[in-house]
Length: 305
Image (tube, rainbow, N blue to C red; front, side, top):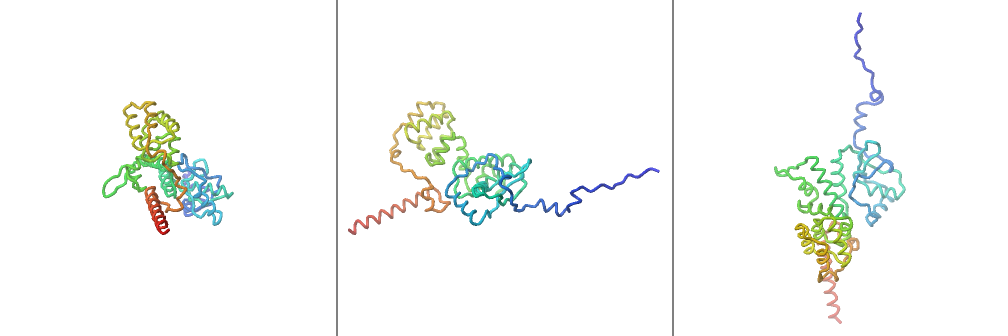
């Protein structure tokens, strides 16, 4: 008599010790307190962690009430977690000697992680031009890789328009910010420090790196930065392959009527007097209004004597 093969299979350990409901629940997003040592920075994260007033306020807030807002991370294949948002919170917790911080863990592809990282960090109170430049570039490449095309009034948006739509910038402005990523580090740092204005910086980004190095030397020698008009000339000569080292030095040695008389301030010097989202133009407008009021008051005081 032939034995009939049994259809019976042994249950797995997963079946024995958990229910489907428990397994489904384990996959749900929830806030977890994760050891700081298991949290790793996002690869090529473009946002800097500066020890400025904003960072000090965050440290003081966490010291008083703890880290309330959870960070966002995704699990790494070899263990641990890659931070999507919350890099400054992690740094603040490390300064305070905390062992864990609240984190939402979410499964994400590389492109999804890049887009989420950029979108979360662009909400910061203060963003440097270089941070925005590399963030826009990373997001643009991720969207292109995904093949994402948003629909708006039945019209497909290009990837760069999608980046602009999400950030409230025009397509052209996004492109101009991304141009800053072509600057050598020394010039890009000067843009972040407001030593080189945004418009000239975009134009000189079209110079190759060797030309930018010569320009940096000429700027140091003449103790000046290029005006917008000079930057346009430098770009045009470079594109026409006629920009020599001598031409760069000649242009930068030109006398600019207001160059020596300019007074420069860092945004941090007076940001406490203006709303966080004020543009440079709005700040300039209010400063000029304030100076006009001050002048009128001085005139009245003089006339009253």
